[in-house]
Image (cartoon, rainbow over all chains, first blue to last red):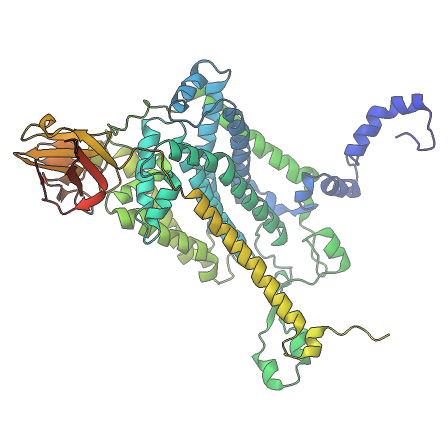
Length: 438
Length: 160
């Protein structure tokens, strides 16, 4: 760096690139722990991470990177989605032709559409598997209850994103899947009919519905999803990082019952008895407040490592694997496009994308219970999971013994839904009659 | 100088001017939030729709020979004529909104296998209700007019 005393114009010109660089990146590549720490918190993108991260959080077999994969797929979806917006027109007379143009005339058009479609499918799968990981490792337990709730909301928004995107190509599948989907919504008690009318902007699926779904898909839902993702990430930090098993030499993870000072001061003994004991998780020194969640109490060994480079390299690897996967799939498989909408002739059978086929299978038994009743009960139960299961045991380990009942119940829920999806995908033919795929 | 005493402690449960004002401003802010959300709902609920009208003419009675069961798929109604009696039965499946096709025994839905008889009563599949009948009337110019906003008792015909 040039000395501030040296003000000759020629020297300033020579030092210009270096000065600009150092004004953006304040740290050289770090060679000390202090450098590693400041690299993490002086960079806008890196400062979302803690300076140090527990070794357990970096174990690939603990998280399988599923949360990150979901996020990176969302990132790919935003980038490819914005690019596709340059050519797409949300009009019933033009939308399908634009799909054909993507195939025929737009450079990389078909490839971008493939990437967008397969990333969307991948994101639904990754978000769901991420939820399974969090459940099966007991990671929704206090203090992470609310982040689980945010996660369930993120799953719902992801599904709604996918549902709204489904109409946009304006092909046969799009039209009939949305006709069926919005009819399911109309079975909801009291508000069902209004919800359907608000979604479609008309009595049936048409131009208004296409425009509304487009606005939801490219503006409203991405904004909601981004906001929820931001809070979700922020909460991970504030809840003390990823869950991990309690360590034996840790003083039971710093949990102890103390009574709040106000109770001690209370004048009447009855008031003191009535006051609830307060759960205090950690005691922070000034250092702890400065350095993030890994405050050491007593002389326990430090099991955390610096985020630079350990965490960032791991994240980069997950990102590269995700991008490579999407590129590879998009090279070899084309996103399906059916015939243009023909409102006279529904295809037989009219099938939704695979992740909605479990729902469609349920709906074929009873529209209200399959489409509204059971899904509502499932979502409410999922949202309440951390508030129903209050036992703090088996946190941070896969399939912990102490959680046999909870894990069995959850796996039953997963298996039933997978079976329904398999039946809907492979065993249903014309008129939704049972067929054998062989 | 005496340290400032917070009015809440000083008031000791009394209703002070500060409390009333905070309560009122809180009420105002929260109220405007609700009004804003509500206005947005009013805004996105269309007052006029651009799709097909629900009341339309289908031509002269002579266009439909006796015994005809003609499905107008774009209008989503099936026009039935039996002698001098005419009726319009919805062809939108009551299950999930697919278009039912006219079959020998009545109507059949291609989406989830619902079946209906000639009068639209459910005979099989997941459909929860019979197909509704719509009001049919004779316009002054002699055209048959169907009004999909008015459902009528199944089995009631217009004499032409």
